Length: 168
DNA sequence: GCCAACGTTGGC
DNA sequence: GCCAACGTTGGC
Image 1 (spheres, rainbow, N blue to C red):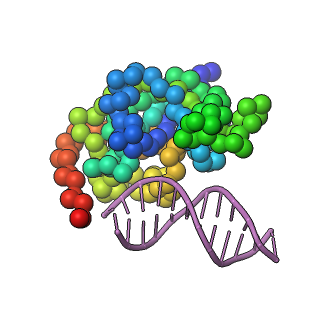
Image 2: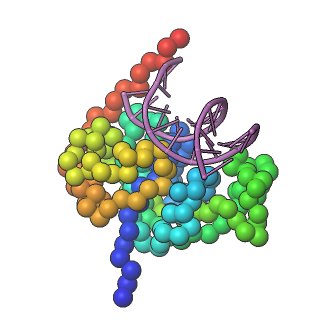
């Protein structure tokens, strides 16, 4: 029997890599993750066909910006072996890699980002890992949460919050 | 810029 | 193995 589809949320700072960058490149390797809990999901749990909520962090607004899908399950993240890479980790042994990545493809950019404030206010989303362990950059999402969020994306239009002036 | 939450490191 | 110090993330 076919495996049930799982769902995930992955964070990215849009200044570094946004849903529009994913749209432009089509498929990308999700590398540079250097947290063990997130690594475990990348290495062991995410399978081809799984649905991914693409989350913009440290953004205006922060929130879910679109959809992605896993096209390749966990394999070693070789940026860890490259001394010139910002994510270089001298402790990661190529013969026994510490860090893993998956490949993702672009599925959809929402017409407007669903802001975290709207997610927080939605009753069925109270228990999202996003609110319990906000710092985890690769986190599981339940089927129910996934469905609620797809409905929010379809119905709602969210104005772009202006970026506050930085103090001088 | 501030700070809460969490992870990692290292002395003991 | 404990825990204090420190670093990072990310919302606000």
